[in-house]
Length: 305
Image (cartoon, rainbow, N blue to C red; front, side, top):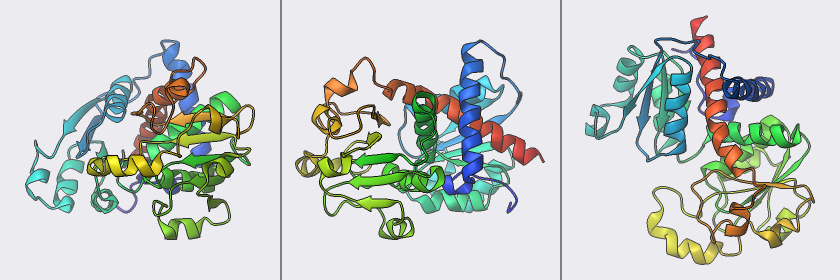
């Protein structure tokens, strides 16, 4: 189990491996659009263990493994013993003995770590409360497709210091860019993570200052899954933290903006930008499919050796 490769955060791959993964995703996207047969893994079984609701993640993984020649089985806590208190470690041992790869979408990041520690097959983090690394693969692919290398660029995160923000902190290290985080006081990301990356990440509570000269602006919903009861309270605090035309005027003239979706128009992003004809957000969403296919291919091949 210790030799099995997993993808729980971006730090599980080296910067060079991540660059190769992004390039492979771009290549697989091109192949897919050309109608090329990509069924290199016939008979491969993907277990999808989801404790949180999902649209893009579920569709992209199910479609992705099918396009690679395999099949997916969707497992929710309501359908399995996981929802009845079976230890994560026991579930990991059993499930990994029957499938070739596992995708887990859950609350505590420790759940994904414990599952991976007891799995004999690769485990992919499809979102925890702390990290969402698969989305970052798609975001980096989207940037490379439109602008080339992101190394040395300035990225501005606008909003809550959530799992996406924390994944951007890891991305700043692995892809070598500067990250400014614009968030309300009290909503900063993990302090230890900030300290470990203080050479390239800084907090700036004023979004206008944070956005100044940025090459990429990124946001997410103000209240993540599990925080719905805080929605009204957060809406008042986060009102100044919206990606809109005014904020984009502070950024570089050719700056891009991204959103991992689902989006709340008029909250974290304006309807004007969300529905602009030149937005890359829909490329970003589609790239979840291609980035995750490249990731699954990489992990499946690594587990064969």
